[in-house]
Length: 213
Image (cartoon, rainbow, N blue to C red; front, side, top):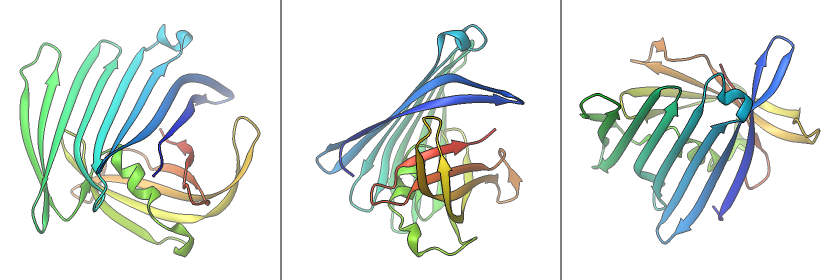
């Protein structure tokens, strides 16, 4: 990846209402053998009055093997404050996460998570998916991985839907790969509704649109 900074509008949709509720910036910088990535999101002034959000996610990724090294999520959401720190370590056949969980007015907790094979976090997984050549995929092909969120281990299934034409809020039109994310615990219980994502078909593989509940 080259250094980049991508800006997004987060739109609240309910019935006939489409309202620009928050803004987010996704950035990556090269630092020797590492990528430093960040996602910063904040609600707009009108939405602050309903539910203020200030979230920052950072992930340091080793370029060789595309392995996450450290993930930090700092969340200010309403009256909630939380900080999750995930430190990765690896052996031949497994990924281990040493997690520190910090919450306002609560004791700091430490949790260890482990999984066979490679694991990612909620930020590095988007960059991992951008390394994949979806041009060679057929409809309904899936990729499975593991996500360390800081508090728990989740199974991620990415399903390839198709190449589609989409139109963004600025009226620009794009050809994009449509994929979905399904998060489950123990491979059965869904953690959330499926997330739909559209990624540009060019060599940059930029996430253009994301839809989720």
